[in-house]
Length: 278
Image 1: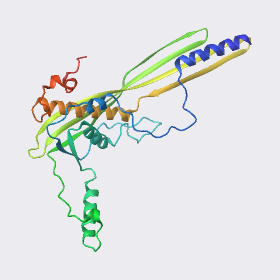
Image 2: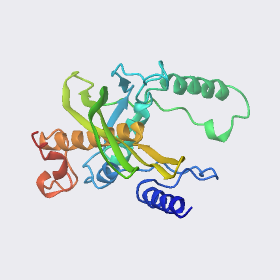
Image 3: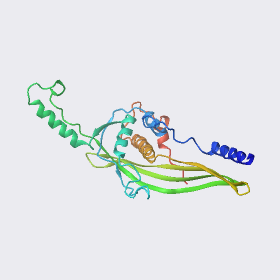
Image 4: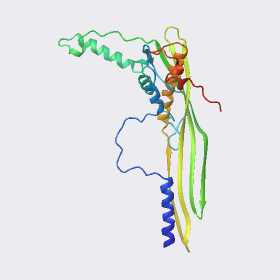
């Protein structure tokens, strides 16, 4: 009996070292989406001399990747709402006046309703004035999620002694996005960037397989797997792309900061550092 207690104690120790607390019984309350360092970098960008009027028509998934079976054979591996993420990142940077274009038809329909209501008596105060013209964009922000690679790296390590084992495995995926700024008047691509973000998955387990008495086998196992949310990684890659695009435009003198400081002496410097070679 003492051997059983000892083996259980060892397993509990392994579990405490390698296995996190399982999902709580109470449901977690809704909260704001957690943001990464790339979002903080956007907030720290220098202020522009004048904000850029830009339109976003879409940000497509061009990866052609689907979730593996048996999870799903038809569900895509990356988000289809990347355009909303791009709008959010552009707003956070403080460099853009973003025009609604993905839902443009809804805006036009609502404007028709307003005009029809203005022809009736007792017009509500909020629609009494004539509608101004819609703003025209100077830039169109184009781009897509261009790649999603699975199992870029994988591996693990483990050990077993006297029937007591501990192991860890990991896998690295990778998502790549492209973002470019297009001049509406000429159609010229003014700036173009590609950013890549890794996605980590880690699995840990501990187990015991041991005869504690004659014909008495103790077998126990515990473990967990953590997958970094792919959609948050896509969001982080898009936020980094917006920062790099702003920095590239300043470096090429396409747009200016409010203080006209050299890029190397401002928060833009981190976006101008070339990536390290493998």
